[in-house]
Length: 142
Image (cartoon, rainbow, N blue to C red; front, side, top):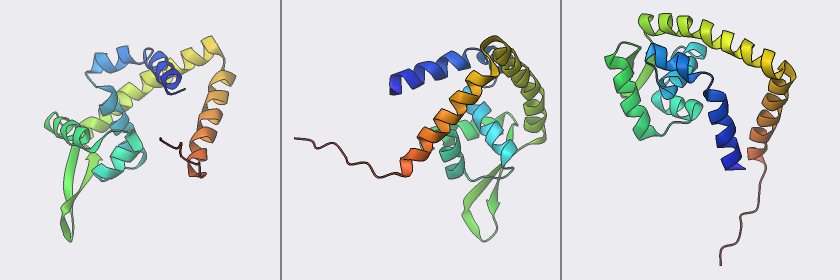
């Protein structure tokens, strides 16, 4: 099943990669931008969880995004070790430009495959994710 989920993800993303490539944004950067659009200020560890990116990778991605002006980082008052991340003006502007094309691509996909396919897939995936809270006995290794 994990291989099938990865294949489905890649199949869906192939429709969006030309947009990302046109704007010079990686898939990981786009996930971070979207997360920061929904929650304007997040800590890197929160971004790791939301975007499913490992902490070592996140550090490098955020450094590159700050370098090219897509995000800003600042320290928390009272705790100089903690950082908060936010979209910069340029990042927010780029997200808006790209978002219009991403939304249009979703419309094209829904027209081609049917809106119900996407609704069913979303409901099924959300239900499956919700199951992670249920206790499952581990396989016994011998």
